[in-house]
View 1 (cartoon, helix red, strand yellow):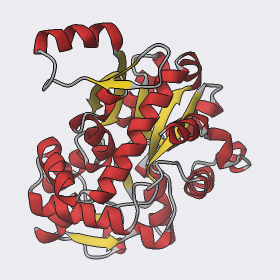
View 2: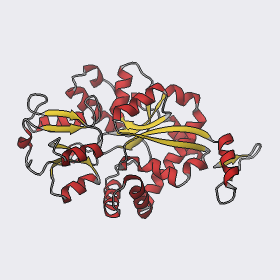
View 3: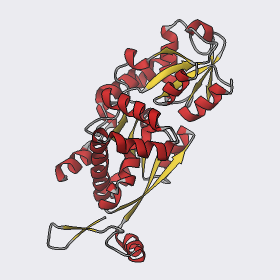
Amino acid sequence: MRLKCKGNDHRIKLTSSNVPVQLMTYIKGIFMKKIMLGAISRNYFNLPIWIAAHQGMFEQEGLDVTIDLHEPIDEVWRRLQDGRLDIALGVTEHIILDSEGGGTLEIIGGNINRLPFSFISGKDVKTFEDLRGRTVGVSSIEAGSSSLVMKIMSAQGLHYPQDYKIVACGPILARWEMLQAGKIDAGLQGAPLNYIALDRGYNSLCEPRESFPWFQFTSLNVDGRWARANHATVVAFMRAFIRAHDWFYANKAGCQKIAVAETGITPEYADRAWEEYTQAEIFPRNAQANPASIQSLIEISALLRNVPKRAGTQAHSYINEAYLNEARQSL
């Protein structure tokens, strides 16, 4: 952590190596701002916040951050709405839904700005036509992967609900388990689970990024009221968030260790995920949400979910870049 001295612009770095454990705990309790940070499941999407935690970036900004993981994607949204979470890496479509309901959630940073998914099917499902009358697993009916799945399927002449069933089964880890158990017949799988599935004989019916090069799947979100009331804290968080993205692109070996520790994947698959994420720039290098990606989400979801009001909205109306811009200027 860094303490700013009165009358100076110097910051003192305190770590467990130069401060006794008991004193460090006491100092944290007095000086460090507590943040409850929500995220979805134990998947690779969360690597930037895990990097910030593992590398002490939050502490260096005077933040005591608790990362609170949830399997249902809707739970992260609900907890951000009711204040149980301060900041969240969550599904971007939830912010649009919240705004349509008169809510105050907003996007302050990027996360999955481009799709890292393959549309993985069971071993007996070789074509889209094989999915007629069968079941596709999605993260949520209201938001998340369901919009994308419906768009992919409609392009192949299959329409929901008459031609196939959709089951809300949670994020990619849950979908992978259900696919293996035969409870669903297909679903989007993100890197590296898509590689694991292919290596075990499952099939990829398509690579969605080829059809949708820009699509904002998840983002860094806050309640605008809380952010305004905690302006300095949010800016400090964003400094760590920016640094974590820089570190991600520069440290393949370090990312491997963190991914293995946090997700349980093997080093080989951690490296394959890093290679895809860096080559395709799945995480934004500048930590920003991408307006083109959000606009793609708006247009696809408005059409498929029959929300005419949404179709007329612009991506910028959901984004507040002020905290990120101020953080970058102060680094």
